[in-house]
Image 1 (tube, helix red, strand yellow):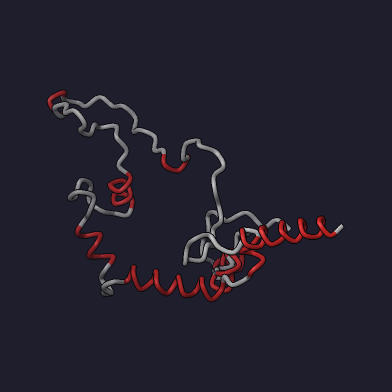
Image 2 (cartoon, helix red, strand yellow):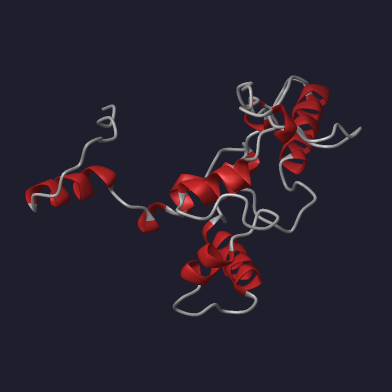
Length: 172
């Protein structure tokens, strides 16, 4: 009987100690881990469709390890979709950057935001049971900062603004 109690106590202590930390000072909000060694679905970009140029002289000279016309160019595609000039620089469009920074740009903003977010997560991720059982607390930590998309949709529709698409209603 006494030996069984010691074994139960030892197992309980081991389980508690195993959940105490992840070896990092940074609080983990999105506790998502892949259990497989499969491909990253979000890292795969489909190639552009093949097309025949009107003049074969437009084809670039093939270079080993170089790019070809069907390689995906997500940055250039995003710049073009946001109204930038096609082929403006190496992925950067001066006009797009000037428009984005027209009200001023704070230097070191990424480091400032990262430090503030880290402090926010430390202050709001102190729930022991959630850390112990590796529960995703991201949405709960930022809950009071999130936008109620359905209330916003209703608000804009009441004002007569066309909203051609809407998020699905929440499952209850």
